[in-house]
Length: 369
Image (cartoon, rainbow, N blue to C red; front, side, top):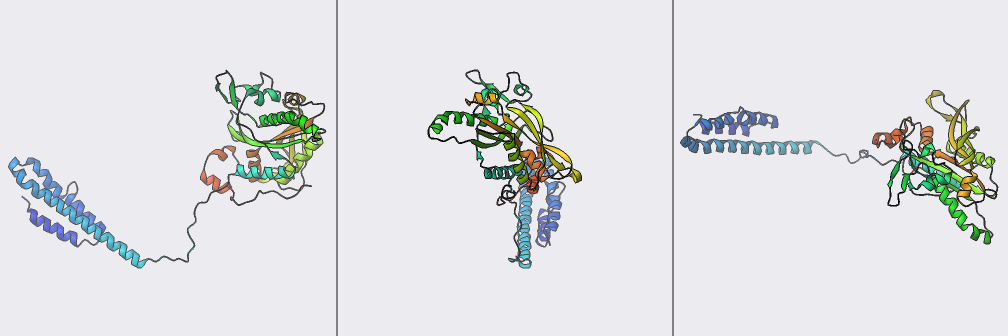
């Protein structure tokens, strides 16, 4: 039988003079590890008679507890000494600048939105908003979408389940329903305005989220759109072109914009057009206002007479124009972001690269030509 007193004395002496935590750990493994000296003694208890276990068990367990306590006490002393040595040798230089902390950034979509609002506000446009969940009338019917138009199909549109009245609401596919609501309010207030000798025109921009079942590098199921609407007594395509030319010049900070209108079809405008601007695509960047390439930037047109009638306005007296921009796409063009989906991926690294300071003013030139 091993001399327990001698083993305890030997281990205690080695523990007391252990130079560091690593040496102390080696002693612990040697004594209390799976094949350590004390662990081997504990294994012998199973082969002893009951009387022997009653005698030897408390001795071996007591040895284990004593060695474990000595190791813990020595470890605490070594760690305290190590900490004291570090505190004695290290100094804090209060003159050094603090470590940089991660700061919040403004998302490019919100920055671009602020820039667009600033430009249109200088032209006299006011801001209008509406609900994200719309009914069929405001999202389709009032905007001259026929009942079987493809935009009403499931592959284009997010429909909600039927409500108690059997009607199905929809996540708006554009911000145009806000135009309908605005023109309806104009029709309601028109008699009072005329009686007071006032006939103020509508001049609004409508930014907001829109939803379509589509996803690739330039399309996402949810995206941001800004539409504009002007309604007055004598509005024509010349007013539309001037407005869009001025916006593009200021937003892209270029002194000259060469644009062209291509005939197109939108149910809610007639005539309809897509506006292209001259650009240079060389070098991997798109430069507006130079080069010989053309790039589509906005859909637009004169408000369809049927849309005016659906809002209670007489198209023989009232005319107007409308246009629609993709806010996220304009941000991609202006700030060189290659994939629209990255804007909604919630990647902090991407936001740190493309984001803006919260104290940065809208990045547009001043004044209108």
